Structure formats: structure tokens, C-alpha cells
Amino acid sequence: VAVSFSTSGLTTTSVSIPTVDNDISPIFSVSSPLSINEGGTTTVNVQLNGDPSASKIVLLQSSIPGVISISPSSITFDSTNWNNPTPITITALQDTSATNESITLTAGGVGLTSSNLFVNTVDDETLNFIITGSSQLTEGQTGNLQINLSADPGTNVTVTLTSNSPNVNFTPTSFIFNSSNYSTPKSIAITTN
Image (cartoon, rainbow, N blue to C red; front, top):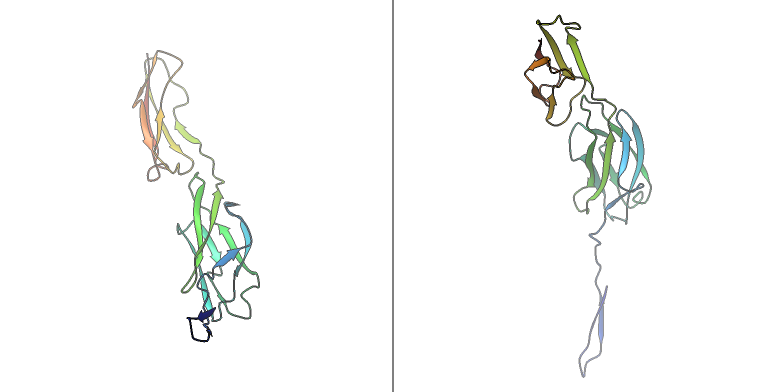
């Protein structure tokens, strides 16, 4: 930057003042949001948007640990490679949840302005009932069923029991599955009149 000093009666003097760009930030080769199927992998390039003039370490971090893996988790850029696209591998990790997840992948570091890439993981689990127990009831008797879910619902799920016959009663008539109990069978008594 050139700065000039002037006033009446004096010769104008200019001074050159070097400036350091502090708006250097990592940039991703794809736009947000990025979708990855659970268990799938994709490659994205990262580079800086300007010459950092000194070595800078870009740290790559997920907003929710355990949803994606990032390799490598850091990249070093300097004046010789700042504009070279550097590949990172993002993997959507397998889990037991039937819920799609949205996370933020942040690239930043000391002396850098952080950049975010929004990543959606598309889940591959399906949410179904697993039912075991009585398959036939004799009128006037009670049978038992055990019901649980095939995957983590990710939230509270209320199950309500109904029948197309007014002569069938359930105990209990409803219950809740969640992330901590979805695989534990609930016992249901079925009585016929």
C-alpha cells in the first residue's frame, strides 16, 4: 500500500507499507451441501485462496464426531503449493441409526479464515418392526408378543396397538422406542374374548 503525505509548502512524500493479507482461507472444490451414502466415500480437493507467505496448517474437523472420517485430517500449505488442489477423502461411517445426519466439515487453522462444507449422510438402515411370539390365539386365552425395532430411530417413536376386531385387547396399548431401547423387545399381552 502506498501512503502519500502532503501539505501546503512541502513536497509530497510517499511511503510504501507492506501489508499482510489475513483473509487467506481454505476453499473446497465442491459446493455445499455434499451428500454421501452411509458407508460411501468421496474425494474433495482443498487449496488456499491466496499465498499465505508462510507455512499454514489447515485442520479438517467434523462438527459431529463419529459421523464421517476425514483423511488426511490436516494439510500443510506454503508459498509453493497454496494453489495446488490437495485431495481429502471423506467417508460416511456406518452406524445403527436409521436417521440421515447433517454435519459441518470445517477447514481452518491459525492465521486462516475458516471455511465450511456442509455434508449430508444418507442412511442405509431401514426402520422395521421385529415381532416374535404367539402366532395363533384360542378365543378366551392370552398370548404374548415381543416387539422391537430393526434400527435406531434417532428420536422417540410411539407405537400404538390397534386391532380390526373389538374382541382383541392389548396390554400395554402403546409404548415408546428410542435410541437407548430400540433393540430391547417390549412384551405385549394379547387377550381375545
